[in-house]
Image (tube, rainbow, N blue to C red; front, side, top):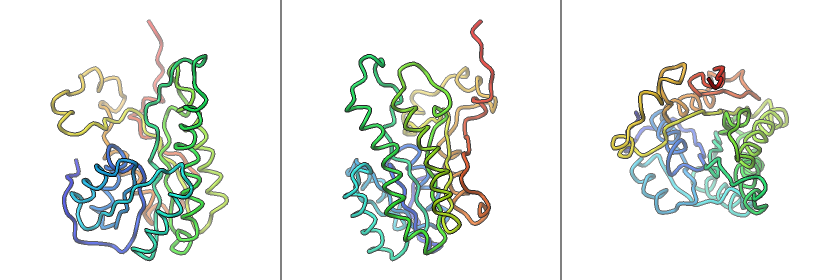
Length: 257
């Protein structure tokens, strides 16, 4: 697991990672910093975001942002350009993360609209405002979708719809922004995003791990390493695609006995 620690080296590239105060977003930010990126972390949680940026070191910089608010997105992108003069990568991870809403019959339209605003409109707004600067450096975008775009539990309509839309947005952006900007999506399955102290105190069960064809539940590093590869020059011929990181669960045939 990547440790949160100060970093001094830089490769000159700048990445903007949304929803980066915890979980997968924080793991992605830490991984990119370990590879020499300058990373701008954004989140609604200003206190935690500022704290983790300080721990990550001089290659981390935090700005507060509601990705569903176009004014805040435009201002945040302008701050990045004012501070660093360039932008090479955008990682859209911010989301209303709880997949469960109440029953469909009781689903509140305001809740539905908020989930879609953050999970789907947010990545569109970020791509819109970042595109001119990404284009200047043959940059890349990675959207964090979910295996729930293709599979569902009961009462997850808003989340599933937002992530399904994000997959469609991904290939649409790839066609509109190519060849200068590559756009891909990563769809995580069960990823243990809890803080290390919680994971140690409340470890997952053997059964949790064993049900995965890969033999274990995923980690934030599993997702972060895939995102880092998609942002690299090694993925230069890859665009418009979805990469599933779920330990094989979405390929497993499951019947009730």
